[in-house]
Length: 190
Image (cartoon, rainbow, N blue to C red; front, side):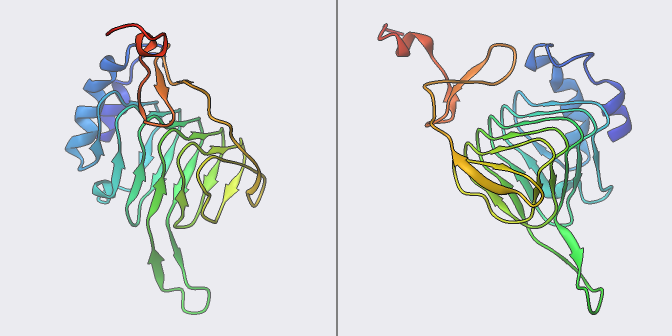
């Protein structure tokens, strides 16, 4: 099913979000929990037989060649954008006994995860977090933080604007995680 889903990936990310639904139907057949208006680029990989551990909320975009190695639950919050060549793994081995262990990765809402980021331990990433390209995340990240480096460290906190871009000129309100309504912003009646 994952092979078929990859084969029918729309040609580029500018395709309307509803066009991605055909691919998502195939991925759901593997046991993944995928919300509405989700775009998952080509080359997506996860562990066969553990797909049920993956939950992707509404309005999520995942770039090319993303790898979600889900030995335990991985949850990605709404309006999160994940760039290409990102890897998440939440399993490991005890260094003395080599016994396997795993824990949950939770990605908050409205996050931006840059190109080549690695999240390699069970962690919680807060809402509206930016993880800079190439960062290695091994610890929890609080809401609104900007983290960079290997290992990732907080450099500052975001000031949230009225609206944040998602895809195809779709915007969301970063405080309510709902679609941004320009009429309400302008004080017009809906």
